[in-house]
Structure formats: structure tokens, C-alpha cells
Amino acid sequence: MGYASWRSLADHKNLTYYFETALTPNVFWVDIRQVDFSAGQPVRKLRLAEHQVYAGDALTQFKPAQPFVFAGL
Image 1: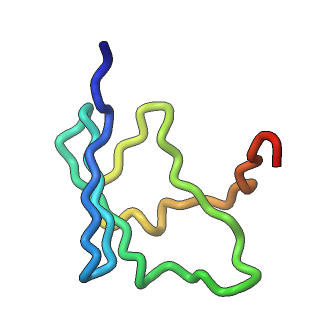
Image 2: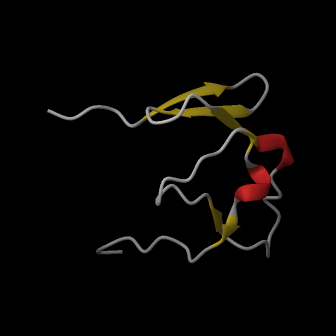
């Protein structure tokens, strides 16, 4: 039986998502109001492998990425 690697909290009033990993004591967040969702913006992702450690506002840590490919669609 495994364990949850992440905990997350969605603050719907302030449009902020908070995250915490089981491996570090840091809390990091993304303020959705600061994300540019306008047409033509690149897809971005936050790398969660290779023991990445984030703390505080993580928006600037998102890097351009390819969109997800869904099987069968």
C-alpha cells in the first residue's frame, strides 16, 4: 500500500492553489490570477521529477511544454 506524495489545497475565494510534498517541509503555491490564459500563450508545466524543491510562489518556475496527448481521442 502506497502513500500520497502530495497534499494540495484549493483556495477558491483567492484563486490560489497550495501544494506540499511529503519529501520536503516547504509549501508552494500558484496564484491563478497571475497566470496568463490568453489565446496564443504556450502550454507550461511545473517539473515534479528529479527531486525538484519549490517554496513560495512557484509561477515563475513553470517551463514551456508540449500539451498532453490523450489516448483514444
